[in-house]
Every structure is written in structure tokens, then in C-alpha cells.
Length: 185
Image (cartoon, rainbow, N blue to C red; front, side):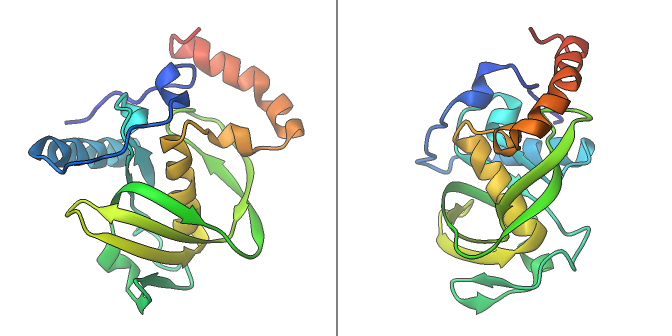
């Protein structure tokens, strides 16, 4: 089922989400809805709070561009990107090291708003998969960025929080218009 995506201004987007403690049938149903919603909205990631559910659950799928990364390791072993997509994860813990990268980002909770965001180029993410197994994912490029973006959502952090003050100022009018158009504020 396609769910309604929460638009910026809804307080759930600023909430630190609850940890997922059990993997019930309800979670599987929620994941199915999230994947369907993400695909319908033409996104590459979606976090549970973006559909109004304040739990640490996110989905990412960058399989449309297999060249978007230079490596992917799971528990230290090289893995093919397509074998990991869609990536469904809960309770992420991220580590960063190395260079930062600037990239134009968008967000399904900010329709038609894009802006440059600086993030670490590589990430090491300890996550639980939907089967309950805990793994460590190491990657770079678009997958790294998507994992970071969705993990931010789980902590009440939004991509505009990572933008420079100058970019935020230039987007202020567009954000207010978006909120009016979508019935927020």
C-alpha cells in the first residue's frame, strides 16, 4: 500500500525515533508499504518517520545506478550492490572517516526542493537487517550518502540542517511555498 509521505513541518520529522526491538509481521508489512511508497515517489530512500512512523527503520535502493559506488563490503567481504538492494535496515550506528563530498540532494519530505549538502564520502554502518542479523556495511558514493540521509531522518535531522547558511537562505521562499502548497503551517 502506498502511504502518504509526511511533509516538512510535521513534528514527527524532528523526533528521535524509537529503536526496533522485535521483528513482527507488522514490520514486514510496513517495509512492503515503505518500498512501494518510495518507488511510487521515485525516491532512492525512505525512513519510517517520513510516513509518520517514529521507529528506526529505513529502506534504500540505488540499484538504478550500479556504478554509483566503487566498493561495498558487508562484514569485511566484497558484495555486489545488486545483491544488497533494496537495503532494509534498522537501528543504524554510523562511523565516518576520510574526505567529505558535496552533492545535490533532495528529500521526499521536501517535494521539488534540492540543495547542496556536504557529507562524508564513505560510511561504515552497523545495522540490523530485517531478518534480525546485525551486519557492518562499508561503502562510498551514492549508497553512503543515502544511508547517511535516511539515518539522519531516524535521529530527527533533516537534509536542510546540513546545508550552508547561504543555501538555506536561498531556499527559504521555496520551502514556505512548498509548505503552503502541501497544507503545512
